[in-house]
Structures are given as structure tokens and as C-alpha cells.
Image (cartoon, rainbow, N blue to C red):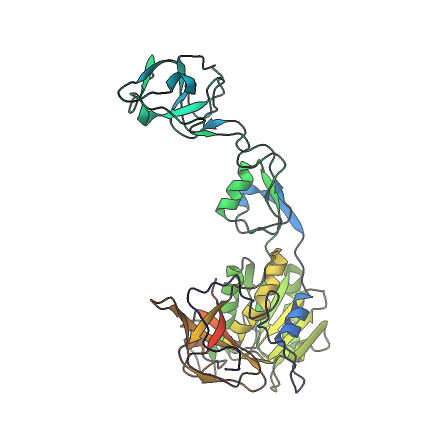
Amino acid sequence: MGEGEGRGDVRATTADGDRGPHGGHGTYHGTHPTDGGLRTIAQHRTEVLSLVDALAPVEIDVSRAAGHVLADDVVAATDLPAWDNSAMDGWAVRRDDVVGASPRAPVTLTVLADLPAGSDAEPEVTPGTAARIMTGAPLPPGADAVVPVEHTDGFGDSGLRDTVRVDREPAPAAHIRRAGEDVRRGDVVLRAGALLGPARIAAAASAGAGTVRVHRRPRVVVVPTGSELVPPGEPLRRGQVADSNSILLVAAAEAAGCEAVRVPAVPDDPERLRGVLDELEADADLVVTTGGVSVGAYDVVKAALTGWGDVRFVRVAMQPGKPQGLGRLPGGTPVLCLPGNPVSAHVSFEVFVRPALLRLRGVGRLDRPTMRAEVADGWRTAPGRAQYMPVALQRDDDGVLRARRSVAGGSGSHLVAGLAQSDGLAFVDVDVEEVRPGDVLPVFRTGG
């Protein structure tokens, strides 16, 4: 490891205080200059993100908003709670009537009303009286405390009685939820950019929002290429491989909150590939291809898209994933062209495609949380290139997070079986020549 990393302290390290390894929020994203015409990871990521912006807002029912990102603030339409109400099942009383009440000196009050949740009744609690009240029911006029039912002789009663005996003095304003103590009318309950999960949807509904304006889910079309590809599950002839990349990329896009469509593998025929892309781009917010972007004789994506639309093919100073393509198809739809090797496709998705999808969704923070982990085993790195190493992460009993290579061969771009054993990527900067056991690296979990 280079100077400055050392062993460090990786006990109970959390991500939010660290900077991410792959752009936007962080410094660990390959910003060092490179030789040989390679661009840095940061340079390529910046150009990728320049192709996309948050999708136009749509208004949907709040009950269908789970998983969407807010386009506008949600503002409370009323005070929450809207009125003083009971926090307990019990009896609404005038506290002066029951000061000093105890099991040895109970106070008996006359019952004047029964107030279930949802009641709009407003009986006035006068001296010497009480109203039975359920949790959430509005506090009646005159009452200034609630005595829990457990502190009376009415515990377990189903019917309403004429009197109730109180055997404990309540504190001032006991068990009363005050109007507006949660939020006031006009307060911002949720900010634009918030990802709507169950609790946030409930907050929006409680604040009076029947509908919310959100960014619609991006539609991603994944196009695998290569004459060697066959659908998963079919017998393989010599030279053929199962199309796993498109399965991986569709699943990853869906996990990132998008709608994803996978088309059948396109053989090494540039004209046919252009026809497929021309047909589908109108229904896509982003097209992702995999395979055919390197320097081989049959690199169909490079052959088909060079000079067609505005697509550029570049080399990025990273391992795996050096060959990349990006730009716009003739109809203007953004396209990202990834390498065809499985680990390269996985890493390229995490570093470039996923942030682009999150930006389309309107998400503010594009990076996964970053942690620091102690390396359990060492490996050599690629000269002149930053490295993303698939690792298995485990926190020891002493709280130290450790990273172990999930594949014995390192970050080789074809090692898909080892990729299945990983749950994160470790980042090694471009100027590091060797990673040794005990070194500390920035890591981030993948898969969600």
C-alpha cells in the first residue's frame, strides 16, 4: 500500500463520514493523471452524468408512491395533530379534581360522556366529572389531563358506568398530545429528493397529501451483444456462453429503482444492431449495451455506433472495465456501452451506470456509502490503473471490518463464479503497486 493508508482503525467504521470511491461525494475515484491516452474514472463519470438529468415530474396517488423520489416538497396542510387528543385509553379529567388521589384516598367522578377515536363530540368536563376517552380522540373542553384506565376502577370494563374511581394523581397535562406538536401547518414534512419508503409515505398522507409529485421511474433497455451468446438454460456448443450479463444488468437496474427491459442477444452484425437500437430507443430513457467495445475484429458495438449518432469509445484507467463507450443514439437517447466480461460489466454498472440511473430518478446522493476495511490477503495491481477488487466483507468479533478477495485470481474480468461470492468492491488507487495483508482500503457494498 502507498504511504498514508497504513493499517488504520477500521473498528465499527461507518460510511457516511467517508468519501466515496467512485465519484460525486468522494475522493477515491481515480483522479490521478494517467499516461497512454487513458482517462481517469472521475473524468469518465463526469461525462456519463452529463448525459442525464432527473426525469420530468408526474403526479401520482400517495398510496402508489413507494420507491419513487419526490420532485417537490411535501408541506403540511394542517397542524399535526390537528387538535389536542389523548395519548392513552382512560379518562379525561380536570386535574384539580384528582390532586392527591391515591389507592387509599381515591376520588370518585361522575361520567358524562364516552369518546371513542373519531368522535366529534365536545362535552364539557365540568368540576367533579370525567369523560371516558380512547387513544387519539379529541380532548373535550374543560379537561386538562388524562388518567390511564389502569389507574381507575374501570380497568377491563366494556360498558360505560355512571361513576369512575381514580386512585392516582396525574401529572399536569398528563397523556395529552398537543395540537401541532408534531408539525405546524405550512411546515415542510418531506424535502424534494427524498426517496419514498413506507414511513415517508405515511408522513405525506398524515400531512394531508392525497397525491405527490415524483420523478417517474427510468426505463432502461439492456442490449447484450455477441454471436457466442445463448439464452440461459440452453445447451452450450463449443464456443458458446450463456448470456449472464443482461440478466445481471437488468437485476441491478431494477435494484436501483428502475424499470428494466432485456432484449435477446444481438449477434455480431452492425447493421442488425443499429436496427435493434433504432427500434427501441424511443421507449428508453437509457440504453445499456454490453460487449463489443474493445479492439477486437468482431467488436460489433464499436463498429455499429462509431459515426452513428454521437457515441465515443474511450479507455478508462481502471481494472476491470478499461474499454467504455458513451454518447447519444441518433434519436437523442443516452447510451452507455459496457465491456462484455461479467466482472467488467458488474464494476462498470456500479461505477458509471448506477449513478446515472439515480440521477434520472432525481436522487441527490449518487454514491453508495463507503467504509474502510482491513485487507485479509494481498494481491498485485494493474500498473497505471485504479482497481476495483470484488471482496467478501466480514466484521470480526472485535469490530474490525475485513475484506478478502472473493476470487483467487484477483479482479479478472471473466471470473463470474467468484463474483457470486462477493458482497462488495474494494478500491485501490492508481498509484498503488501492491496491496498487502493489513492494509486498509475504502470499500462499498454492492447488490442493493
